[in-house]
Image (cartoon, helix red, strand yellow):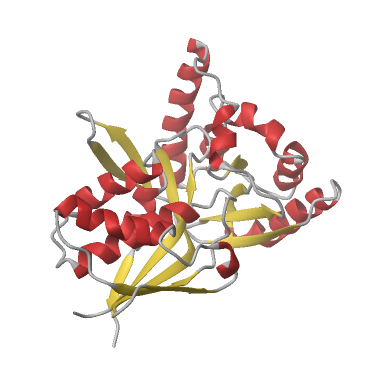
Length: 303
């Protein structure tokens, strides 16, 4: 049985008005290697290696196990190595990379019996929502809608090549569970209509690189107004980024990372402005200028 390397990109879920249904893959990666072994061994390297479990509670391994449970097959004994470069609990899809990485590892070792759609369904079950796992696996930007109960449709959305993202990552964490707790169970009809209209405008703006449509389309009323209280300095960071040339700033996933959309020439000054704004709130942060990843998950054989 051969070994494999699975490379999975980071993601930004929600992207403003696309709550739980729209996400984009970013050019920042976690790498997972899996090989047949005589005993289970889980190791990690990379920037955030100290934050991941090195036992059966590891999400990559648990996702790997789910493939064989789903197929009714006996799982093989493996060694796993993870190279972790995506920060955890920051809204950049680290758990989605683990779910996709483990499922893809299990699928290739099982002989690749599962389709991409089946893997995405299993990943959605693990994550609870599809807006991160879809772009993590498929790449680019993905719009997701439910069809029959338990089934999802995935629709690729063009991202204009003139646009990049700038992610400002603060030195504090925010769990998805906590970010969901502040959301209301019901919203006014006007807010629902607002988000429908703005998501439609955003998709057109991103595909055509139309700045005015992007500025308008990134506005949201379903989740960001409620989550802002969990992210100190958010309004100041947004204002600094806009003044530096950003077309808009949104919460990446559940936060606390903030993501700006801009044309490439303004990206460095926007990143510096966002870091400076958080410094004024006594919060350390870093920024990255990230292209949209257009390949999604890549599987390669190991020697």
